[in-house]
Amino acid sequence: MQIIALRILKLFWEDNSQAEKPLRTWYGVATKAEWTGPADVKEQFGASVDFVADNRMIFDIGGNKFRLIVRASYQYKALMVKFIGTHAQYDKIDPMTWEVKSERRHGYPTDPQ
Image (tube, rainbow, N blue to C red; front, side, top):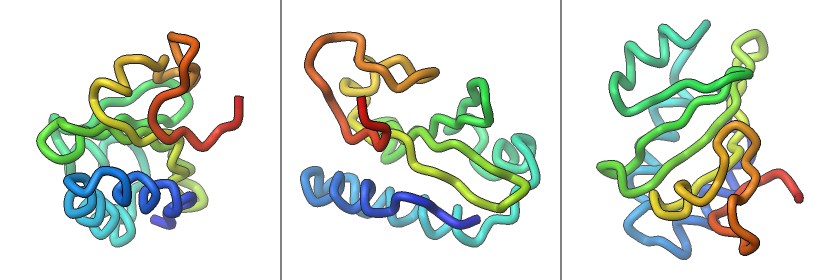
């Protein structure tokens, strides 16, 4: 799968050094994957991935310390990074819309508000 917005992951791990190794691992697995649908992702990641509407996936990264939201285009073999943050930052957004539940923006979403 092609990963779109890798820069967001890099920016995040520059600020959160504990995230670099698990994010690089996820990136390595995802770029070699040939997923055709959610079942393929679930088979590879098991309980560390959840699915929401519109082909969005939420990955637990680094022993559930971080959350990564991506949107899949299985037809085009692409994943677009939509959000990466700590679990606490993730708890402050709506994973369906990436909108922040509070007034202050947290994490590293890629969609402008």
